[in-house]
Image (cartoon, rainbow, N blue to C red; front, side, top):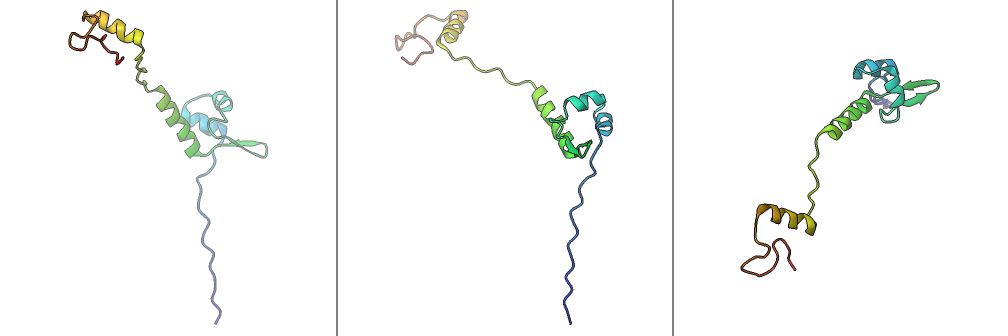
Length: 105
């Protein structure tokens, strides 16, 4: 009796998309797809350009994240702190410590 070895099936990958299919999916022109082929994860297969749907979706997500407003960096320079103190109408020095407001020196 010989034991028969069965090969495990190869993982099924999603079909590759053509530039026209990607343009339709993104609702953009074919020219847009051609211009952004590297960022979209385009691969040359012979003379053809193909894209994985996962790469195209990742491109869209990166664009969404970049479009979200980012919080402005906080400027803690002495000039900025002094300006804010002046605008608030506070005395120039802390009455308790005798030191200028906002500075640890």
